[in-house]
Length: 549
Image 1: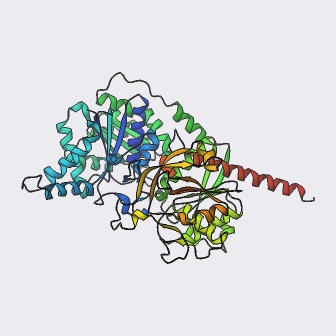
Image 2 (image 1 turned 90 degrees about the horizontal axis):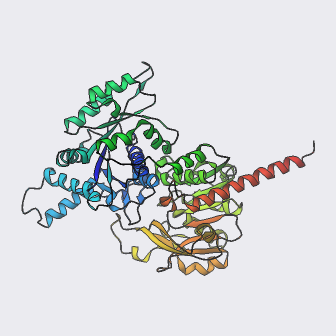
Image 3 (image 1 turned 90 degrees about the vertical axis):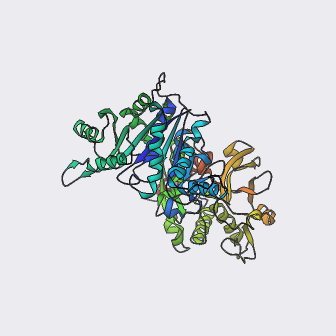
């Protein structure tokens, strides 16, 4: 049986429970323990698959096809290990399971209640990963904040587990905020005290309190928090704002968070943390040798969490290239033929982001055309790849009506069409082509050069696909299908001959990029953008040298 750590939050949302959980997991993993993290979300949606990105940020997809919370992306990026369906549970999934069991008569006619039926199902899910024997420690992050009505069943389940499990097998880490009041020029502990008191009123007593703060905590502040929150002073952990989330594990190491946890859980004989690769990554990240500007062409740019995995993948790839990647957000809805040169000419590369729906697709097509005609490195993901196909059909093959049936069901040239198995699907949740699928890569292609492999596996989330009825037309005109699914022959990768770097993929490579294994597509795209930047600088120098004095 594994040992269990529960991470709760108070005062306000977005304090970074997921980052603290992932950082603690990384430190424990670095000491030789096997660790996994799971997220329990209090909303009633069964999963975030039907949520608008503006509502919940990106929907993260696992190898086994689970549509999950974006925090699972942090877990994978920090631990370099995959998650699964079992790592993300929502209130909706809990209630769905209980109601289905009630309909099947499993409760033998008893009145179904929050306690014990809902809380029992929550506990079952919380313990599930630990019962398989694959992990030494299971860290469970509870979404929301203490005091939220929808979070109460989760908190009650933790209370029961604290009572049921041996004391050395279960502990609670509470993340809270100690705000700094500029007018008074001091840190205030009252929000933290109220947060812990509210948690204690529900019967859950934290063993460690992690304090998000803009200023260092004095010994006096630590003692005050410890005294009024009923923990030892060394169990009050300072979590100062960091310049990058990847510094947080080292900050927690300095604070001794992992040592406190190991002692609380009575884990002995652990080794010193091995963080050589992590420190090496941070050195490259903090001391780049060059800089590139990459345009992110999307329609959800107002909320950066909508493209979280893409942004993190650029951080990984930038460090690998010892290059600072500056992301320039370009809203595709407001990109036109008249302003495209003004908005994109200073960039070194373009990534056209994934998405759904008709809004903003014209701007994405315009951006693709600009990158193709100006030999600017281009990378299209999912919808971005589909827009590259449509742009090529319209402007090279001369099919002015070419489109995707997602946006235009009556187009005479449906170069992107609904997948055959999707045509009878009525329910929207969990019914897309989801999870990891194989892809065969053709030899002597850019894709093969990048992957250095004939067979890869990547994660998907889509309903529409390249229409193979038009494949010969595209390939004869120079747009190659360099990667295809070995069974369905679905086109997974397209690339353009004679272009420095022009590639589009139907899958989501950003979902497999980690600190220790940056995704090769992002690494090579940043490298191409860096070469383009050097080329532009060289041209500017050459031009200035030819101007007579």
